[in-house]
Image 1 (tube, rainbow, N blue to C red):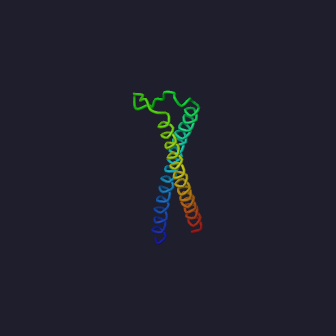
Image 2 (spheres, rainbow, N blue to C red):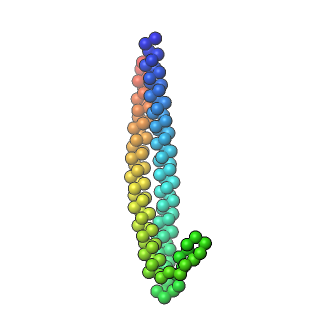
Length: 123
């Protein structure tokens, strides 16, 4: 009878570790999706910036605002695109760090699950 409470404790801890691992996996996938979206924003901004920079300085340039296009100076649009590219780069670096941290936690949770299974079998 004394082995039963220990077994229940192991099972409870195992379930908690599994839940932690699943939650961490979901957060990693979410980070990856956000990183991909930011990568698309960054690529679009840099490509648009390159194309806009190739135009003559006196060309008319319009900025999309919702369903409307607003006439802006080319210099303003280039600055806006450069800012968008730099902020997306910073956010991507933050997401990479967060993903690294989450993957480390996931590996630790998986190792703990393996340890529990090994200790459970040895008992």
